[in-house]
Amino acid sequence: MKDPVLESAPATERAAEYAIYKPNSRGTGGVVRFGLNKSKASLFVDATNQSGEKQFDWENKITMNWGLSDIGSALAALHGRVPQ
Image (cartoon, rainbow, N blue to C red; front, side, top):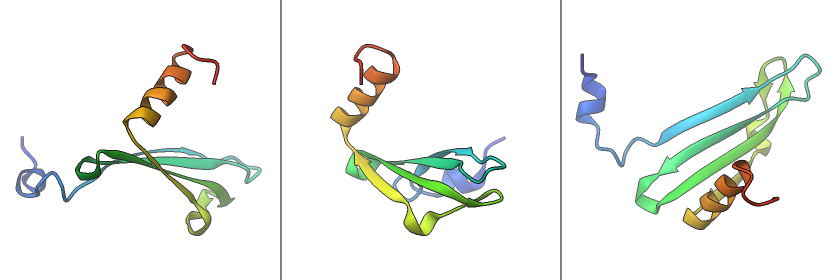
């Protein structure tokens, strides 16, 4: 079954997002959110700390704009091909 919202919206209007949440009972967790921007050929990475029970401090987040070379460096480090 096809989703009518996905069919009608142009690809440039909707950013692909993926978030990794890691809250804990001590309140020292965090979240990293990845957003793909095809028109800018960039991956935006937002990160912030946990501010309460399953709550995150989005007002004090950090935002990084990764280009193709940044993504390649991160993937090489994650695959163990470079030390850092």
